[in-house]
Length: 208
Length: 223
Image (cartoon, rainbow over all chains, first blue to last red; front, top):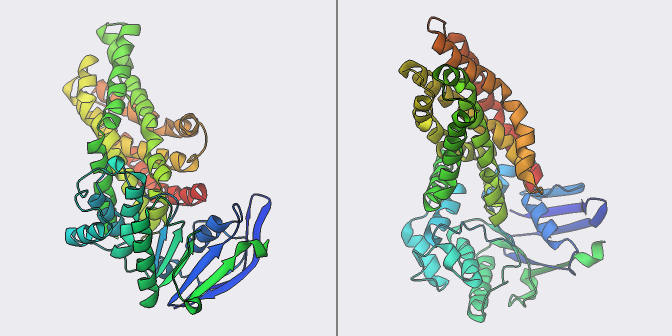
């Protein structure tokens, strides 16, 4: 159970974003991806998910290339991008249930209610997502973390639009996931309260 | 796998129920196009019967292209398409779910409203029956070919017009055999079997290749 990236190279059009990127992430580790704007953080996250094609290199999950092993890899993967992936005309419960069922796991209404409650959205279960604020919509999207049993979380700027309380909550959820043997890869400008030995820091500026 | 299929179809139908105008625009467009032809050409029964097959099919073609852009555009904009691409389910099955829901919302209403168009053009009951069956076989083909176009033009500026240009020429076989069958059924003693078989063959071909081709184009477009 590990994610190994070997000599990865990505480019957008003719511009090389990074090359020779290698790292190994094992269960119980969090990787903090850093880099200036435009250094390819989002591209790297999307590449790791298989949404973006890399030019050179190799990504391995459990010792096998993700290209040949894509289905097992995706079962263990949860990706939250810049967009919340929520349908504005559906309410939070419908959104969460649909997303879970798409991933092949059905969750009950009690489970979604519990997750929403933890994120301070009790009472908003029946409200269409378009009527929620940016921060609340982000909270709905992040509730998926509690409903999924994916091992590897790939999160692109998960703290954006959250208030102080939600930031602390998300931090504690991340710490708990890592302590339970999960893996997290994220980009953020927020400090993370995680022990140094469990944290891997990768700065993309060094791979240009 | 079938659970994901059902979940996606259910979601799209639910979204359409919450936003009914999207469904009705396609249907109204079809009705209006079919209705203005008599105004522009003639109210004479013989002429109307002669142009009916072509008019109904051309209106169906245009109405179906009108809705194509929406198949994937909304999911693309709010990020749900990425999540669909990231599931461990076979993508062509999920794409097929999207196309199926789209057909239920834009193709099937055309089939059901077709008798109204038939009455406007003085068609007999048997001819209207043939028209409905032909539309029932033909409109899924339109949705499936259209989905490939929609996936290829996803995220491009002016994608809507581009889809029409890309997809309308591919609709021609459906138009030819679809309207041919209605015309033949007006003759009375001509066998309709070749028309049915040819259109069904198109349908099978589209069923096999369209979800797969759409899935491949989506992966490219989302990158």
